[in-house]
Image (cartoon, rainbow, N blue to C red; front, side, top):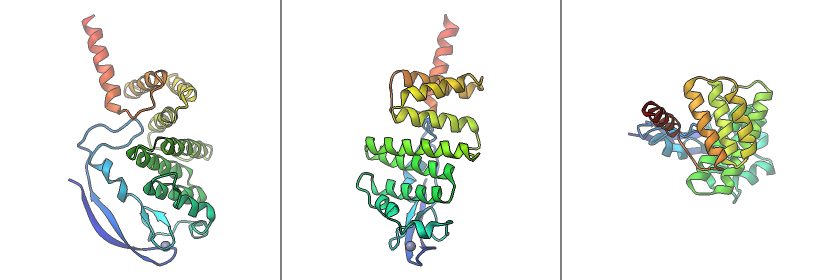
Length: 231
Ligand SMILES: [Zn+2]
């Protein structure tokens, strides 16, 4: 069961008292995460409460009562306000993209990349394919910047690598996706990672930019090894 509750957050930038919905608890009993780490249901569908928007100044963050470095200047810029009100993306995706701008402005490139990934999931849910691809391309650029600044994208380095490969594949940058996938295959990864990389390679070669799960990758290997046993 997912538990949500109503709360109030006083905006750290303008002082506006906002009614917000908070996530109490959820679960992922619905199955396997996607290749890009998107969780299964029921957590999957709680994405609309992961970010809050101040109704007065437009500050977007998971907790708008906490100030983020240099954010008060940024929310007043045209760049920020244009993103907040962009008709190119769903409203919720704009909130994640605005939060990404705030994180990038504060030097948190890894966090900013993740917010773009979250924005891409919102676009997926509304079948906004072009918008989703734009979010994924932004995420790749930010993760690149994170790497250059020695920031941790994910505690598991291999998860971060698979995420980047998947972002490349899903934004139809197949050539670069294949190159990155091959580079990671050369590192002699452990079995669970190897399965996912091999599956990514098949998807990339098929120019498949759709959403796929980790479970599909492991099932595929299992059925292959069974076939091998019979042979
Ligand atoms: Zn505000």
